[in-house]
Amino acid sequence: MKIEHVAIWTNRLETLKDYYCFHFGGVPGKIYHNRIKQYKSYFITFESGARLELMTAPGIPANLNDTLEKQHLGIIHLAFEAGTRGEVDEMAEALRNEGFRILDGPRITGDGYYEFATCDPDGNRLEVTTRNI
Image (tube, rainbow, N blue to C red):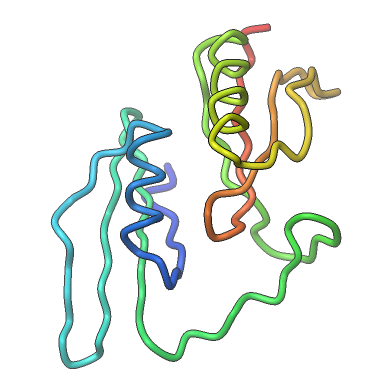
């Protein structure tokens, strides 16, 4: 088994699509638009074959999970694997220079990763990591 895709609701579909494509090398599929339900989505495909589905529709309530300070049960972050420690550092610096907050790291974790944590434009928590330390 493998995880086929993970889905994220957003009110800024194009912004998130551009973020994941530019920073993480994702390739967007064609936009899907269900006019009756006023639903739109993109599948973003990454080099590994994993996909991220970005979805928008009216009436979706805000997520009450605080991904910065108080985390709650449930899915809390997505992790992207970089090839080297240098790539992790470069990504952290690039995101910081663009105004994205680096929440933690880059650092070596107790379980053998080198990583940093950040958030996408919607506040979804992300990790960029490598085991090649």
